[in-house]
Image (cartoon, rainbow, N blue to C red; front, side):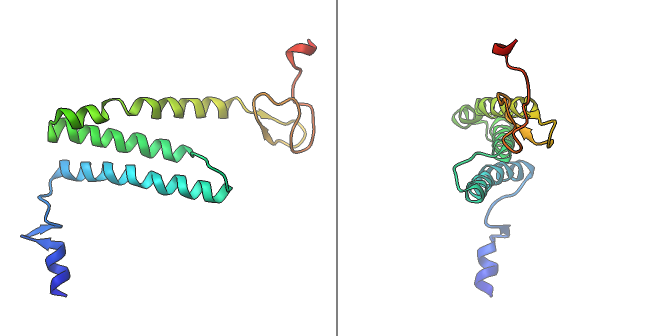
Length: 136
């Protein structure tokens, strides 16, 4: 088991890395970014179609902001900073689109099922949902 100890604690450092708070932030950013792969994979397998769940965007946002912080305040490397300077924009935009779409869903008066915003009839029970503009 000495080989395992030597592998994990190399030169008195865990995994041979000189750890500090910014290293932890950088590794957390990488962990968040990597974990989103499993979230997307699980959601796709569960529904048997390609989907990108909200958790994917939250993990992307957290990971990119942590890595941007690491790049700005610890590495101070212009290439690394530029790589994460703007990645948060589409993540926030996708979250806004998702929450607006969710809020626009219609509740069926017959069965209380949540129906897509443009629906005229409930896909669950067939109840008419709203008067369309053409009928007014």
